[in-house]
Length: 427
Image (cartoon, rainbow, N blue to C red; front, side):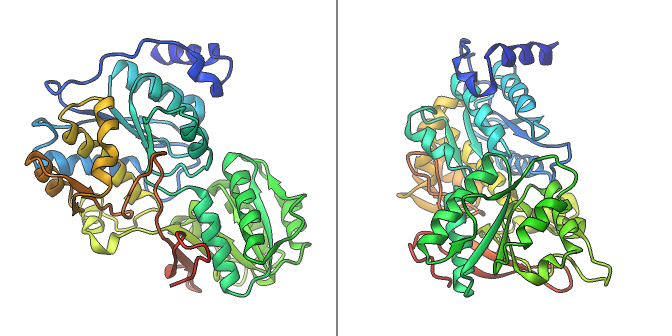
């Protein structure tokens, strides 16, 4: 019955993009006496899962904090909802968390299209939302207009920065012409437009950028698109893919020697060993993605013991793209609640930049950070995904790592790009 009621709420708001026009009284949120309540709106099922389930990273962070005393003297409660990677289900999930469970903060959503709906419900209910993986530049624009009232942040950089990084990777390798194939949604088109603009400024040229090749999400046959992009004869092809259709496109293109005719460049959305295996091998037994290059937001995994903790708890050391960012998003919500000495979304909002930015003691371990806060000291949390310094729009900037698929089908990080510099020199 609850889902029916929430679905009705969504439909009566005319469209999902207009959820903020609905009115409801924000519910009372957790007090210190009740203990901090957090939620997640992340996909736990559906065809869009790649790599590891991000919700497990949030659970691991809460478990770690509860083992060292919790927040404001009480254990943290985590309520996980399955968005299934869909906007309607995400709206149902956030409304339940905000209005029934009365959480103070939420980690999510996974995709920008879902976050764009979820954030409106969160703001209306004064719930702090931190996304570990929504990269669309539209959130910076909306934050600049004041839409979020400070109840939004993300631990992953905007696609503006990844477009700069990927364009730089191409130019530093002598590539002068690109062709793009992008999923026809906010993520794909937004990334494509940024890349075209930046590559041009770096002295390159995106072929036929006035008539770009885009494909429909949830399509089944992409022979026409792969034939068209190969006909452009570009030195490199940039695939801005969702995982399921990206797999089919790359499998389809293999029959046309896709990877042998041009350098394949990919984004963080398909950075996983699982995706490489899904794309598979050609008839000769070679990995289809061998030689592909890509970018992924930098992380500080080698400086932390999080990989070992993951392996110990879940039996695998295969850390997926946004696992570190999900961990950091969850930790930041807890640190901000402790710093505010309240378990409310408003309290978290007021302290999120204080615990993530200078000045303060630089600290990566969440338990040590909580100890310092209890002692009344300022902290500057250093995440496993990067520094997580947040600006007034809730944005972070971090380096990007350059990855490559080796001949044996394994992933290797081979370089780094620093998006803070206009020239984006590779270190």
